[in-house]
Image 1 (cartoon, rainbow, N blue to C red):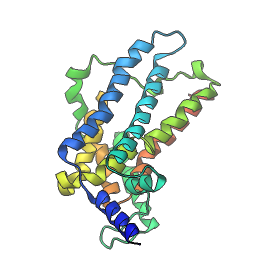
Image 2: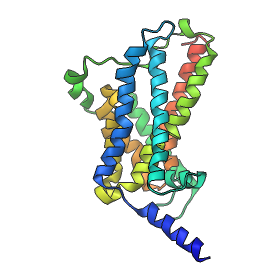
Image 3: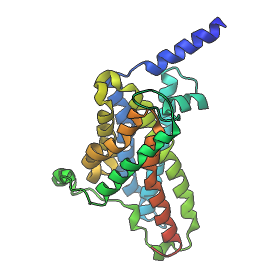
Length: 266
């Protein structure tokens, strides 16, 4: 009995223990730098291989990078003294009902709060809300870097290529569940309050933006705008489902795009 109580207390202390600024920056670097190396370092080396178009190589490198984030998350949990099991992942990822910020009570109806954030995200990405072109600030520095984009997949080349789904599925899993969201909203966000206080969600969004070194053309907008859209609701309602649902809508667009290419309709 005493052993179980001590174990519970130890787990509670671990969950509440905050990271130092140094540890936060190290974790960011370990997620961002390998992804940038894969995209801008490894992709150009592999691309000359016959039968491997640069778009597919880029896609493969992204999957490797996202998978590394999952491995990195597990290594961090292990280093922090957590047992590597589903309970640990669930607790750290906050796979739980959203909690009312005022009462602290959990209620699935609070998931409806994703709707205004989804609308906001849609309006921003669709250009219906005018925002300063902050990404243009970096243009002089990044204009020489290649811009890889999966939307460049040509339906003429990949019509009937159902094997693209073997790339799409792990991309969706490791992007929205076990990669970016696991690391940034599961591992980092709950541990940033000790350094950033009530603005930990904002700092999390900035880190998430600057993690996109492999997509430097969108770094600043992601940091300033979409970090808010993902991190703020996850923090306010103490549930990563908020961020996963909002962020995961990109996955629906990716599914539609890839199926359109495969079916020759894109």
